[in-house]
Length: 383
Image (tube, rainbow, N blue to C red; front, side, top):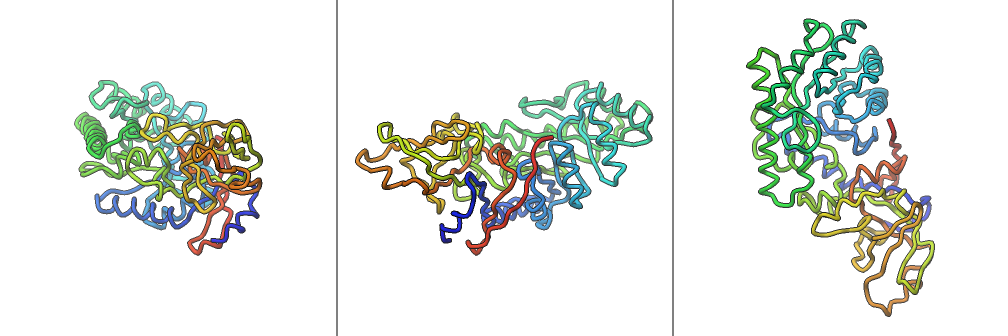
């Protein structure tokens, strides 16, 4: 690709390598098909209709979202089967109700008997029947109910408090978020099995108590790509796989060559005494996420590459202000940085966390497979 093409972009700019993204989509869908489960990608990573349409075209069935704004935006684009995979707060019942009345097949999530009771009663009072999953905690990472906890059945009972008229228990959901902290294939395989067996066990307990539980949905990108069996699971969710990032490379489920996202930035100054190169991409452009700090390779605020995407190992991105990126030169002290990397030259920063970096921008500049065509794909943020 002619690098002059990037000169027309206002930096910092979020670049998306479409060929890499398409390979990532194909890889995940092929694996889910081989394991015999439905795949419902998590759209919180891209928040982009153009990306999600490609995931659906590859074989995904419905999508997962993390905000009701995402649900609204994707439904407006014609996607009508959506799972809102964050435990719903009572203040959002009305918003969810409006979406359902508009024709969206929307599935909600609860993790407490209190919310389940209030949701069911709202449904009865307003003539709507919510489709609901119970969140199960299979790794102690975040929220949810442990598979053997007595309150699992309490939440199920609360959902049918009004004889099922206000809410329908559709199944159970879990997310093995601790997979992001693992480093070996053996550990990932073990956690994927723990995730599977724990969620299946929760479903078995509910069924034994007389509750229908047709859906068993699990997923994180590392466990989805590491699971050896998904017996008893009906659906898998994963998000960051579509772009991958440096944290996922550190986990070991991809390589830097699989990462489809980067931030294009421009050199705006130098500090010869400190051996620094200053760019126009600070933490507002790449995010404050330092997720690789706990991994074998700490990339600071991201991996520095030249404009073609080739890593420059001697440049370290360990300091950032709001709108300034400070790249430290660790190579040959004799190199004239102002000559080697003059003002106006460009770098690409590969992100630690694709979701966090994406959230700093309102569009992707999608580079086509022909390496010449660039399209602007809008994305949305906030709640």
